[in-house]
Image 1: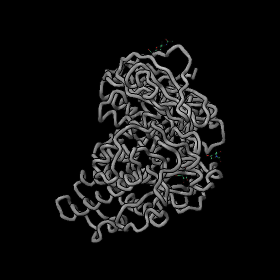
Image 2: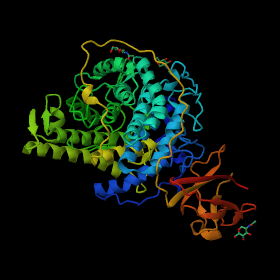
Image 3: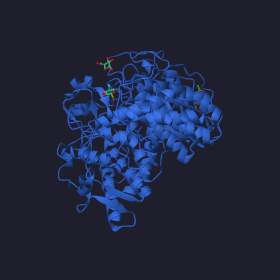
Image 4: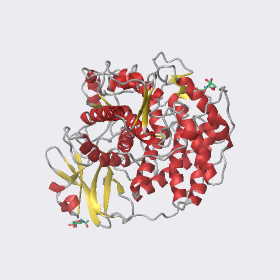
Length: 617
Ligand SMILES: *[C@@H]1O[C@H](CO)[C@@H](O)[C@H](O)[C@H]1NC(C)=O
Ligand SMILES: *[C@@H]1O[C@H](CO)[C@@H](O)[C@H](O)[C@H]1NC(C)=O
Ligand SMILES: *[C@@H]1O[C@H](CO)[C@@H](O)[C@H](O)[C@H]1NC(C)=O
C-alpha cells in the first residue's frame, strides 16, 4: 500500500520513523518463539497458526487489535500512526478472505466460517455506502478503495477509484458460494452471496476498460494485477451464475476482451505492470507476481494467455522482477544469481525509502510452488526460448526442450526449482522476528521490520504460500476454458444494473463449540507517561485479585482521541468472573478503579474470540 501523499512524512530518516512507532507490547500474537535457525518445515508449521491469529486479531468486533472495527470489518493493520492503516480496504480484505475461505474449506474450522459470514454481510452493506468514488446506482461507488473501521465512507483525498476491489471481492465470495452449493446450501449461495457478487461482476463488465489506481495506490492507469483479477472474476462469475440457475451475459461478453487486453502488458521480455500511464519506471513490479498467484488455476496448464505460474512468460517475468532487486538492497549483497533474494514492490519505490516486503518476497516463492504443482500434474516441463534464462539461472545446463517426469533432467529441474522457491521463504524466515509478527516491510540494509505492524495481508500471504508449498490447492476458476484470445482487441463495456444486497440471514450452520476463548479486554483510560494499566479479577487467569499478578495491558494503539489499553487472556468458555482495572505508577504504587466490581461471563459458542470494552472509572 499506501500512497505517495505520505511521502513528505517518509523523508524523515528511517531511524526517526522507528522511534516514532510505539513499542510492541505483550499483545503480539501468542505462539512459540522460534529459533531463527529452525529448519524451514518447522518454521512454517509454527508460523502458520501465528499468521492465522494475526489476521483474526485485526477483524472486528472481537479481534485482539480491532477495537473500534465494526462486525465484519477487517483492518489493514492496527497501526494508527506512521503509517495510519486503521481502515478497511476492499482489496486487502478480499484477498485475505479468499485465503480464509480456502482455509475453512481445507480445515473445516467453523469459527472461520462465522467470520466469513460476518465479512460477507458487512460487504453487502459497504456496497451501498455512497462515497467519493460514487454510489451503487451506477456501480461507481464499488471502486472506492477504503472505508472507515465503522463501515462509513472515508472522505479524505485518496488514489481513487481502484478497480480491482470488486473483482477480488467477487472471487472471495464465489469461493465460499461454491462451498455452500457443494454442501447443500444452494439457497444461501443464491439469496445471500449472489446478489453481492452480481453487483461486483456488473461493475467489472462496465468499467474494466477505464483507468484507475493500481494496487499500490500510486499510479492512475491500467494495472496488470487489476486486469488479471477482473478477467478471472468474469470467467468464474459466469460459471458460478450458471451453477445457481442465473446468468451473467456481461461476463460472457467482456471476459474475452479483458483477456485480449491482458496480453498488451507483455513487452516481449517481461510484464510491464502499469500501462496507459507514464510512470517513468521499468514496469517490473511485484504487481505481476501477485496477479499470477491470485489467478493460479490448478487445473490449467502452463498457459501464457492467462499467465499461469508455470507459463514461460510468467517464469521469464519472475526472473526479470526478482533480478531487479539484487543490486538495490544491501541485504541482497553477495547472494548468488542462482539463489533467492529479498523482493520489494518495484525498483524505483521510495515509500519508506523503498524496501523489501514480506508479501512480495513470499509471492516469489508461491509462484514457483504453484508452478511446480502444474509441472507435476502435466508430467513434463517444456523449456522455451522465453523461459530458458529463468531455468539457466537455477540449473546451468538447462536447454530448450520437453522433459518428461520420468527423465533425470526433470528431476534435476524440479529439485532446483523447489530449492530456489524455499530460498525466498528462508529469507522471510530470516527477517521475521521470533514472535512471528509480520509487518509490511523489512529494512533493505538491516532487515529490521518496518512500516505498518501486523499487516493483515502479510499474514495472508504467508498462509497462501504455505498452502501452495503443501499442495493444498485452491479451486479451479476455469482458466483452462479461458485461453482463446480474440484476434482483435476492442475497447468495450457492458452497462450494468445494480441492486442493494439486503439478505444477510445466514442459515445456522453446524459448528464446533469451542472450549477455550481468547478474551480481549479493551479499556479507555487516559494516562500519563510512566503509568501502566492492568486488569485483575477473580479467576487465576486474571491474578485472583492480586495486583502483583494482574495482567499488564498494551498501549501501542493508544491515541489522544482513543486512549486504548488492551490485552488478551485465554479463558474456559462459560467462565463467570469479576474484574477491575488498576493503574500502576512508575514507583509501583497502585490505584484501583472505583466500585462496583465488573462482571463477565465468557460465552459458550463456536467463536474463538470475545471481547469486553470498558471505560476507566
Ligand atoms: C481499452 O481496451 C483497448 C483494447 O484492448 C485497449 O487498447 C485500451 O488500452 C484499453 N484502455 C483501458 C484504459 O483499459
Ligand atoms: C484517475 O482516473 C480516472 C479515470 O479513469 C479519473 O476518473 C480519476 O479522477 C483519476 N483520479 C485522479 C486522482 O486523478
Ligand atoms: C470486589 O471483589 C472483591 C473480591 O471478591 C471483594 O472483596 C470486594 O468487596 C468486591 N467489591 C464490591 C464493591 O463488591
